[in-house]
Amino acid sequence: MSDQNPEVPGLPDPAEAAEAASEAADAVQHAPEAVTEVVENAPETVTEVVEAAPTYVEDAAGAVPPPPPAFDAAAVPPPPAFDAGAVPPPPPGYGAPSAAMVPVFPNGKPMLDAAGNPVSDKSRLAAALLCWFVGVLGVHRFYVGKVGTGVAMLLTCGGLGVWALIDLVIILVGSFRDQNGRVLENW
Figure 1 (cartoon, rainbow, N blue to C red):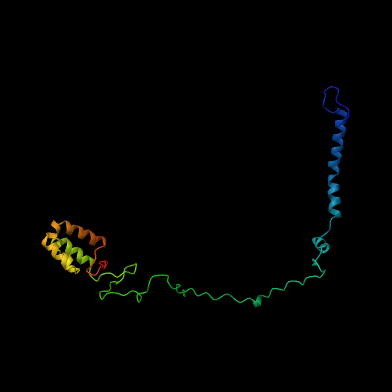
Figure 2: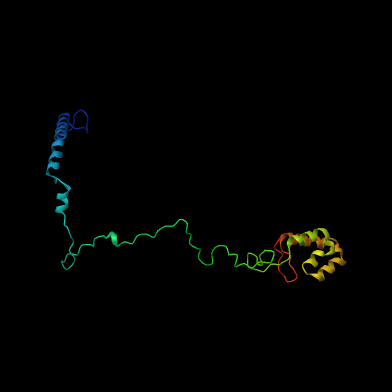
């Protein structure tokens, strides 16, 4: 490719280009022969490759480490049997408290609220009905044991009805308390 094409500068001479193309064609024709030669000189099986590889690694002192122990399936204990009907009990402190843990009134209503605070033995429904029908006379306050404020409501006609209305809302919301300061929670 030393000679340039005199007709087009920068391109090789057509005779040299034809010679290079002929050499490339010869190489392609001889490629299967080259692959066959590589395959014939390669090891015949994988076992020859494995046998030719080193089989152990020596430590610094030149000693060969012992082989690892063989796996013994009989030494492995079997898994525990699964019983679909058996349910383990929850850990202490979890789950709903049992009936034996929550004290109840004789009517079966719990003596404690969800937070563990004592609740009144008086019925919230009875207090709400008394407040609705005769709240201006303070009868609901006599019912829960608040005699002093019951008399005050009786003398003021339930604070002209306003006091009775406020008490009714407090009872329905669940914040009304008896004479001992316990909330009327049970309906």
